[in-house]
Image (cartoon, rainbow, N blue to C red):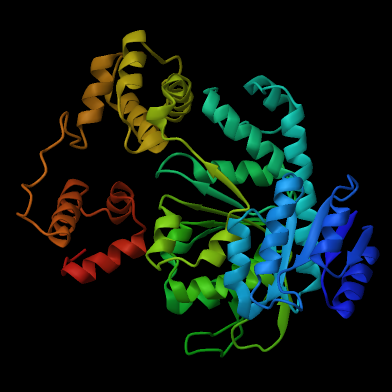
Length: 457
């Protein structure tokens, strides 16, 4: 049963009818006191509550109700309802433990999707509490994780979460350093979901300029602007009924964040050059190697957008924190490289495996893959030893020891950043993609730094 708490009788009646038509049972009450009298009923699976009541328009009564529900029924999801002008209040509620928030006037499909997702996530969490600890073999019997290699306990725990949330439509934020396999995890979520037969659309937000954001994401009509010579479908239209993967979400500028927030909140958008509002049914997965909470504190990322994106957060550990997974990953890459370069039968010696485990891997899985490929190309022997791997690792100029930092006060942060960019440009012979990856920024962000420091790419 869904408990509706709102002091507006018209809102209560509308929500009850909407939920009934969607197949849900509900009960509506007009006050926090009446809600708390029913919250002990175990049939209450979800609470849909207003934040402002007639006696108090500041939201404090709604916050108090939320906190009391969280105390009495911590596993029962709460979805908040508030006016668009009170989003800051809703964000406070999400910080306090609410599952999601809906703005009034609501979009029926968006509200129902939030309800279904909240119930599905609650069911998945209940299953996680009841199940014993999962092994990699257990998970492989239940899910399709074929491209995700590793049995480290931390990685297995991540796969358990990935498997459980795949069945829901919850938005997922994947956090991790460059090269840790965030895109593969996003693909695994889609591949194990009910949307698996529908499109999986990848979008690198770091490569989309603010001026082209609307056209790229929502599409445009012919003649909408100077270079719009024909109609073009946006990424959300292409991903309709499937999953959209927003990579490098931390590189999205504030103006584009507002436009993204609207489509995530209402599940509607407008094509550039058209006044017709289109609905979209899409599951959103995003990824970043940046600290979004720190960006929120600095005013660089919208907090309300962050809470739209991270109903579920998956933090991928760097390769150096899961050393037991390095040998199987290396062997996987070796077999692929050996087949590619017609060197079947190659193996890695025990000394070579120990050397791999001892490395720091700042480039993570991507760096490991590149090293194995280089070693296969450069080594005549069929068994890759420590010396072979170390020699291949030194080729791109990775130093065996770190250079010392400049003395305090000798350089500004901008001077240090400029020097590092120039050093990377020389190191990678001007390859923009490799330089951006090495510095942990997007290509677009790197070009902005070129302009800032007067560096010719």
